[in-house]
Image (cartoon, rainbow, N blue to C red; front, side):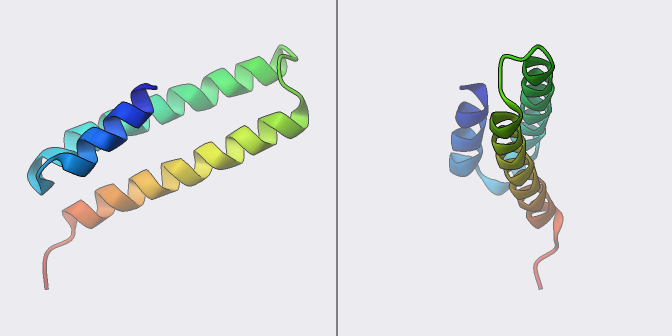
Length: 76
């Protein structure tokens, strides 16, 4: 839920205010990754479900990193 909130906040903020929110989003994504891994190790999720969750979180993490990188690029 927090990740969704951060992503929506970042979408509506001005460019110079987005970096901190995106950093918070990245931290929460990493926390989610750890929780999903722990849940799989405790056999709460199957290996298949774990891989689906992990792949989705990896993609979200890449998109967030790309968004942050875009913010730091200088205009041509």
